[in-house]
Image 1 (cartoon, rainbow, N blue to C red):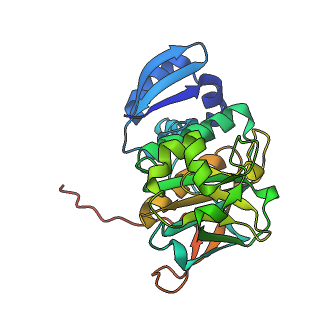
Image 2: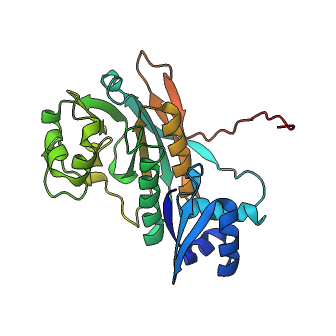
Image 3: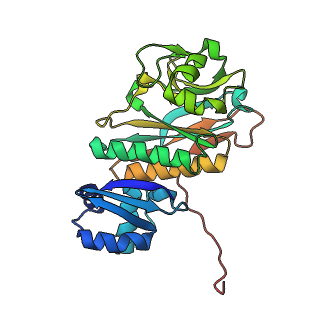
Length: 288
């Protein structure tokens, strides 16, 4: 089961009131979180793999509020349509075919929220993402991006940008050979003649999914406006990951905006608004 680190003070902040540590210890196992250790402010829990929405403090706090009736009913999130359009190039269809995205505005991350965002990304990558093969997540500073955004595939020799935490531009192949992420996840795309690439209207590289983001769109704890991109082979899985990320960021005051994804001919999706967070009804047999 995934191990998640949370801050006691942060949980209290997200719940909206002080929660006695003894109460927290009793309730966590009842919402599929096994407490492994408590050291000062730091709590380490193991979360059931079927509760990916609780791979961060935001999801755990949401479940806690529901369990204790602090908030009742299904959480409701307001979503408005953004002006961001992502155009999908047919070149990616046989390489990494699907993408969804969302805009988050006015989020209050801070140091703890920033760490939780990174943790959530990595836990989703390792679980429903199947080590980024099935799902890969990119988080960017929206203020640095000029839409529309293009999701395409480019020859690795023609790719040139400074990867996250890098100090100079590298080609696509150099990124696979010389960066930690490239060495770890490069096997996913290295056999293709073209690598996936996300570009804005100025031609600035946002990321080379599923390997690494660009330094130009780096997110810091004080960043308030975000653009999320999620790519992969499973349309359902990338939407599930997007829903988890957007609702988690909404718990920190973020305002969710959906993004228009325009797919080319040959796709079933065509024009699709990602991150609409529509509820669905499920019929169950009471005798079961």
